[in-house]
Image (tube, rainbow, N blue to C red; front, side, top):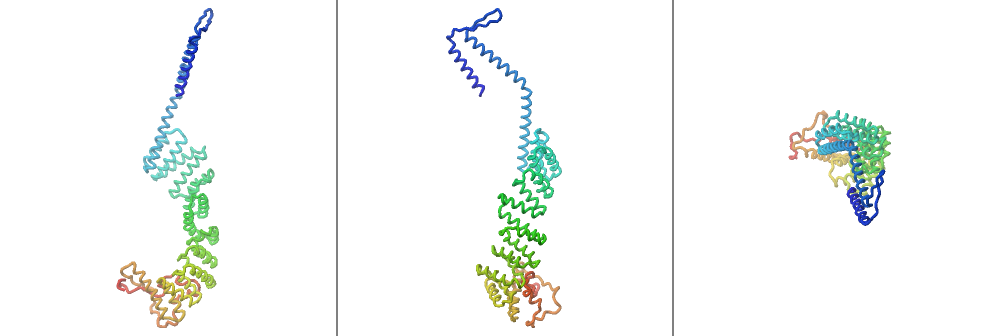
Length: 463
């Protein structure tokens, strides 16, 4: 387009020159040695234009001839580049479509064909991904090693290769080897969100809980991890760590958590168990109350009643506060009744347990009322509640089977217990754990009181 415009301008100037010089009588004299030649000014200008045009054409022709080898080289490079791009596009499309075998073939052809170092590295990475999908791990490692060597002159490119290496190793489940590559990537770009996510996966695989949570908090601050996802990590991996670590490490981890994270039920239950093991009952109570203030949980309430006599008053007072908000909670009434029973507050215990029983039929409440009545010297009522507790267990068991299983009598005593003398029952029969503050029926089932299994062979629907 430029050449056409220039040509039009040239023709326009020539026409203007002819128009202005057509009536001009001036002449131009050319002296060459002894000869003199004259011509009009218009003819001289036209000759100069013709000479210039011829000179221009000759120069352009010479330039074309001289640049021909370079043009051929550029044409050849363009053909190579076009073929490289075609192979790369085809390989990536096949890789994304899941045809890893064909993708690997085309990408390996590109690795051997291309002369561009960066394109060769990219092709090697894509071919390594295809080989990984086909479980050709040796070929994958060889391609990645070659790409790593070729990218050493460019730190950013080498970091990209190391990132791909780490990601593929993590998918294979080799977190320890992935950490070695990620350590190099961190020296190049420590703030990359994707790299932090890979660190999180690697620490999760290697079981390095503390470092995993450090990275998780960084991702949380970058909004790359939601609050719910972080709480799920704390709930699962945090509880495992606190359960298996030393007491000092477990408590240090717990103290480092935020108030909201401490209120997670599994976290509170785990740390309370650790506190109870060392008889740190006040700390156990505080941990459980923090979680229960957020949301009532049956597991936490079951742990809450496991306390010595010195803790009973504080815990009774706290449960009463919860009950003032949830007046019709059968579970809270049962817990409060159990605590009152442990504190030997017979009247309050009976009132709370009876109210809980009115709200919801529960074998545990019947068992507790049986213990309460026995302590108050009412053996007939105690036996009645124990039978009801046993009957609830039988009904629950028969829901899953049409025929009741036979009772296991291998550990039965040779002589039946003396149930006639109900004024002084056996200590095991009365479950004296109430007086020691360790809770009632905390780890054993309701069958602790007596064998509740029916006669073998009788169907449940006949009862």
